[in-house]
Image (tube, rainbow, N blue to C red; front, top):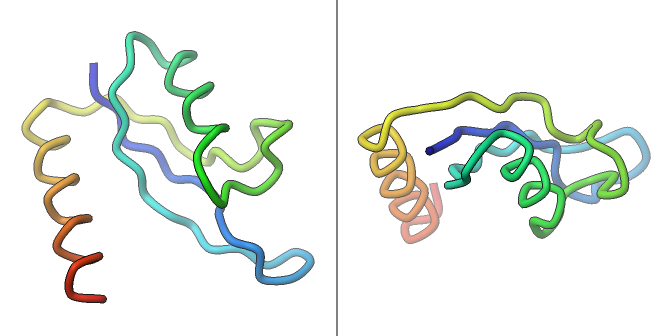
Length: 77
């Protein structure tokens, strides 16, 4: 199964953060939640408060999302 997550990230001072979209493969939502808590830059790793959305998506949406993240990282958009 494939999931799209919105996670609160960054260390930009007290109360400030950046929402970031991640695309993760996992067997079920709980397994994905555990993976998400271990991602770099996630705020409040000891709780689940940083995870704002877990949505199951299709394989095509997953591939498209991964490719768009790579393009964004490559060109700095």
